Amino acid sequence: MIHRKNLLSALLGAAMLLPLAASAQRAAAADDLSPEQAGRPRSQKVEEAVKLAKDFKFVKEGVLVVGTTTGRLPLAAYATDTKTPVGNAPDIAQLVADSLGRKLELVSTVWADWPLGLQSGKFDVVVSNVTVTEERKEKFDFSTYRNDQLGIYVKSDSKLGAIKEPKDIAGLKLIVSASTNQEQILLRWNKQNIAAGLKPVEIQYYDDDVVQRLALQSGRADAYVGPNALAAYEARDGKTRLAGLVSGGWPLNAEIAVTSRKGSGIAEAITVALNAQIKNGNYAKAPSRWNLSSEAIEVARTNPPGLPKN
Image 1: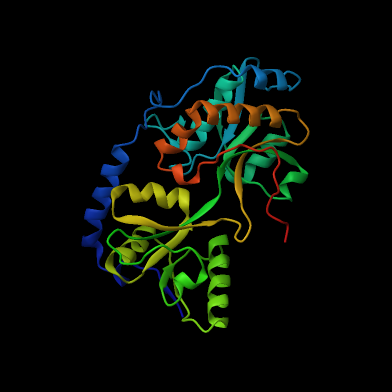
Image 2: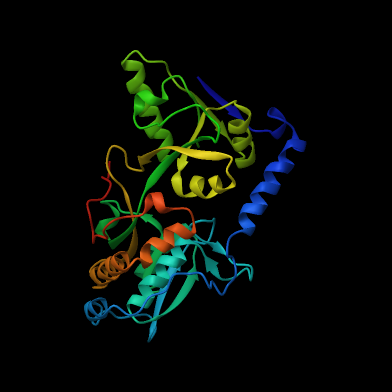
């Protein structure tokens, strides 16, 4: 059974939004959103990475120009000066730039424009939550830096245990966004459960994030299924907790990567740089700052198997 709720009045009323909004503001206030980013992890130059990048033609002398989408924390958003990108993607970009012995220049771009911007030479690389796929590998090279995970989140005091496989969601009321990868995975899990004689799930769709969270807090829904990066960041207010992680490419693994032009010669240098940061401990600080440690990788890879075209 599927329900769609579009209006705030369909839930608890506008007055009940105030405590939630105040809580979200307090959580945001705990972050360093200054343009200076004093807490951003930094590194010394990695000589092996510098040597591997010696033949790469950078956009600017002594600079690594990185395209990034500044839309929403924890991935990337604007600092308090309304022009400097901050978040996990800028932190990763900084570590790569430091490793290559270059200054970092972040260029904001909308998601639809990053492929053309990269191919036209506007950026040296893109760090913007790009998942490795076989189709994208035909035009781009990749150096992985994060696992692409979907998170299943429940109310903090929920009695539900760990959710690890399809049978664990049988009979639950689940929130998911329409026309998304997570919706398709959820529908496949539900189909598998029904075939096995288990109870179907009740899928709920909401057009408003606040209403969605209220549905979970009020008990109208049992869990929310969505991009773990965003849900983990919101969970800092203590109102929700992680119940399960699912690969964004289920049943296949999916990885997020620094993206460069195909055959440009910088991908392996970036992979070496990232692995050096993993080894020296700087890398772990980047996801930790934004509550993304659950998506941290143990080793960076160049052009790993990507999600299939079909």
